[in-house]
Image (cartoon, rainbow, N blue to C red; front, side):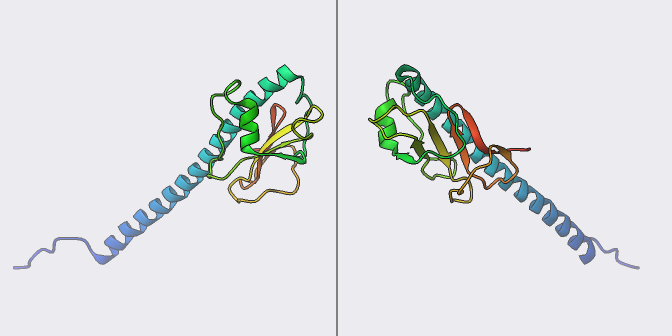
Length: 160
């Protein structure tokens, strides 16, 4: 009388573990890519919020009406921007991008001087460093800076 063996062979178990490993690797890759895209979208939405308030103030003061593709040379701090905009034009302003880093703000003229005609908001993106120059329009480089200037995104991740 021969006893029947129950269970799986070592080969069968290795095949199942291999398939599970491949599925897990694909899932982790897609999860991380989705997280990066979510951070980019959140950053872009926050920049639009800030820009709408800044443009509302600009409409009243007849400034910020020219488009540009270089980041303005006069830096503006978060507190300076909030003192100009909050609470009249926005209840609160986001201060961090999707990666938890400070947003950068700029004008083409110092605050209190000649009326500024150019403003910009930018985020370093996922690579945590500002680029030296910007090519207008979407880019396939998802580490790029996200730049919003005078009513439109100048540099942003997207398909060309």
